Amino acid sequence: MKNVCKYFDENKMAAYIEKRMSPEEIKKYEKHLFKCNYCLKVYFNLEKEILKLKKSKAQSIPEKLLKEGLDKLMKIKCKKITLPDFSKVAIKLYKKGMELIEVANVKTLTPVLVTPVRGKVESSLLKQLVIESDIYGVFYKLFIDFYAQNRIKIRVNFLQFGDDLKHKTIELVSEEGKIVRSLTNEAIFDDLKKGIYKIKLNGIVLLKLNFI
Amino acid sequence: MRVREVKIKELIRKYKATNNEKVLVEIIKEISDMVYNYPRVVFNRSKDDCSEFYIYFIEDVKKIIKKYNENLASFNTWFNVVLKSRYINWLNKLSYKRKKQVDIILWEDLTLGTDDKNKEEKLFYNIYLSQQNEKYDSQLSKKLMKIYNKMSLSDIILIKLMYYPIDSSIIEHLTKFLNKSPRECYEIYMKAYKENNLIEKQEILKEKIVDLVYKISKIKKKIKYLKIKNMKSETLEIDKLLKQKERAEKLLNETRRKFYKNLQIIDIKGIQKILGLSKSEIYERVQNIRNFLKQELSDFVR
Image (cartoon, rainbow over all chains, first blue to last red; front, top):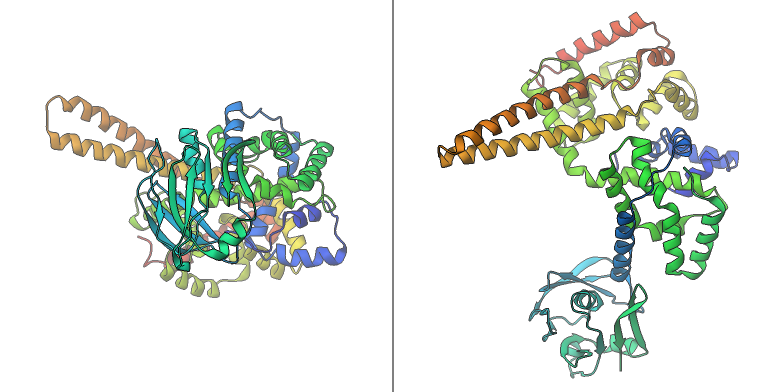
């Protein structure tokens, strides 16, 4: 049995249950419903389950679990924050431990490069960080984690550029003046320098991206 | 247990328009009890499972909430559909590895002939498994296709009704056999279906089997380690572990027996209604099919 169905639509199934479809729509929907194992599995016994749930009494969710859920959601939010669409070559960076960063093309979601980062990010201060790539990365995930551990606000300045497009450099500057270097390319820089970007978590500014 | 329809709709409208985090938190608070209780109320799951499901659900809540279209259905109906599909996905995702393992364990039951009781049930269950997963045992699958070709449609329906969870093939067979629409066949099936969450109970039993198998193998390893150490002080510890192992094995056998005993999904009365046969006719037919399958699958079953 297939694990999911690409035609599965919660709204349509709910409309079907509530009989809010025209006879033609019902006919079309049923043609799929009774031939698709996944949709049938969801629909199977559903009407009775709805009644059962309606009649039952809820136990309150434990406060701790509710908080854990909200915390997790906020963390995911950080991970999913996307800076403005820099260019057609959008990249994601994932932190792997503190030493390995995976660079992936957001459009295809396929890793295009796995790059070891020279120099560890120590817990007390930021050390030099060089990414061997001609593709820029989004660093906020790394530094949000860093912030969470050390409560350091980090300002990221993009300052220096070399001549070779493949080796443009970015300076990442923490508020304490520590400099971290990485590489980018000009096209991306042009997009970035249009503004200052902030990454927020629970309303607190974790990371300011100040593109000069 | 219901979510307050008017309030939640208002919150969703607000959230869709503003993307405000505070509104999202309010939505989550509003739906949390329902999400948390869902596996327990509908599928008799434990509180631990409820917590695990809740966290799984909440990860995607933002995306889920945005999908709701209030012009098509009420929130509560829509949300029930969402919960069910997410619950199925959660089971598939989290227990994929476990399920595969338990399938192997149950397959071994059959091929190794560890327990002669419920042998036919084991056979039917493994036939079902082989159909669900082509990679599981392609040889058996191929053979089954040939066997099915030799069986009458009503016999195939009979076996599927008795032992297999619902799938589209049952509806398809019933449509042909009863000459009725798929919707009518589904309703006929539903009327006959046992209303005691049997499938879910079976899933829980399967998980229990895996846990016990793990537990036993862990104890065995521990005993082996202590025996290698070969110290007098360890003898008491080994005795204790052997007793634990014995208890776990006893429980494992009981659980396995329970699992096979409850394999029948639709009771005889239900099948009688669907196939229009008498009780004795059904028993006779089942016995004939069993003999036929045993004969055909003699290479596979000891």
